Image (cartoon, rainbow, N blue to C red; front, side, top):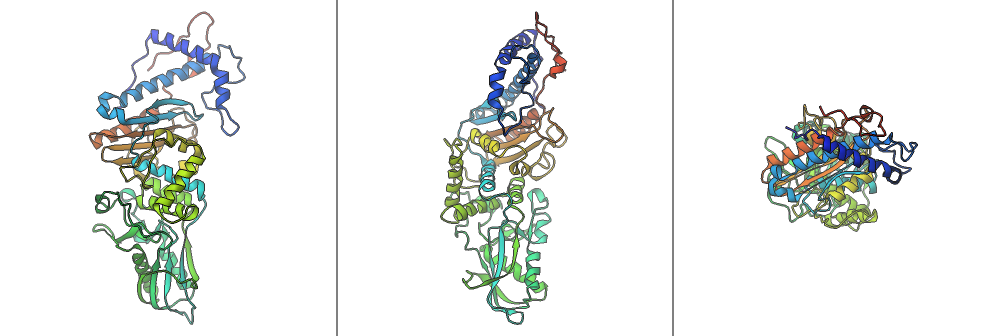
Length: 491
C-alpha cells in the first residue's frame, strides 16, 4: 500500500500560503533562470506576462508548493527508518521536474553500488559517441571463389551482441520475452546468394576485434554459474549459449561456436562444409557477404530493457576500439569517464570496473545518474530505450494494475542487498503524449532482504506517478487581497 500524507491542517495551510507568497515574489528571477532557448517551460512555471506582485501568481505557486510538500513527505516516509531501517543511510533519491528544478533530494552525492543502473551510463555514452543510427557489421570473408568453391570461409565479428538464430530470438529476452536479433539465417542466405556451394577448408570464427579477456576478473563466480553473463567476445551468437534451455551451457570459445552455427546453417542450405574452428582472417581475404545489426539505439534498447550484461560489456569494448587504444574493458571505461568529464558531470565518488554493473566495487551517485538523464533528455533515444512499467523488458510484470503502469520508464538494478531504479515518471497531469515527466534516480544499498528493495521500487514509482497531488490552481481560485485563500480540502 502506498503511504499517503495526512490532510493538511489550517495552520499548515497558512504557512504554505506564506511560503507561496515568498516564492511568487521570487518567481521572475527563478523562472528566468530555468527557461532556456533549448528547453520548453516547465508546466508549473508561472506566466512571465503576469506582473511581479500580482496575486494571480499565488494559486500556481501555492498548488506547486503543496504538491512538492506532499511528495517530499511521502518519499521521506518510504525511504525512512520504519521502511528501510539502517539502509536509509545508504539510500539516495533525487527527483527533478522537466525544467530541471529539484523537487526532492536525499543523499544525492553519496557513492553507492549501482547494480544494473550503470547500464544507463554505458548506453548513454555509447549513443553520444558512436551514434544511435550506427550499425555493427558482421562479415564473411574468403579467398578467390572458383566455380562456387572456396578454401576457408572466415566469419569476422564486428561486436554485434544481437547475432542470433531464430530459435534463440523467439524467447531469448528477459523472462522468456522475444529478443531483438540480427538473424544468422539471413547471413547464411547471403553466403549462398554470393554463389558459394563448397567450403573445402573450414569456416573460421574471428573475434580479434576485441581482446581475449572473456570475463572481468573481479566478478563473482556465480555470475557464470547462474547464466548472468557469458564469455565476452567480438563474435558471439545466441549470447554465447552452446546449448539452450532447459539445459543451457556456455561455449568455451564464442568465436568457434559462431562458426559452428554458420556451418550448420549453410549445410541446411545445401552447402558442403569441411569443418569449423577459430582463428584470424588473413589480410587478403575479401568480403563475400555481410549483415548489419539494428541501429545502435535499438541495441541499447535491448541492453536496458532486458538488462543484458554481456551486450553492455561488448559495448564498453566497442567504445575502446573506436575511441580508445584497444578493444578492452579498461580502454572502454576510460573513454566513458573521459566523455563524462568533458561534459563537466560530477565524478566524485564514481568508480567503475565494468559497464554492466555486475561488479560490487562499482560506485556511482544519484547526482551523476540525474545528470546523465538530463543530458539525454526526455523523449531521447535513451528515454525510448527504457523498460516501461507493466509493458516490457524487466518491468513487464511489475506495476501491473497500479498507478505507475505505463507511466514509468526506468532501468532497474538488483544485486544482493542493492536495488536501483532510474528514469522518467509521467505524473498525474502529464500530457497525453507522455511529455513533461519527472526525472528520478534511486539507489539503495545494504538492504536486509530483496523483498524490501522491490517494495521500495514499487512505492517510489507509484508516488511519482501521482504527482502533483494538489488542487489545480483554478480550483484554488482568485486570491483575495485581505485574507488567505480558501483551498479545497484533500480528498
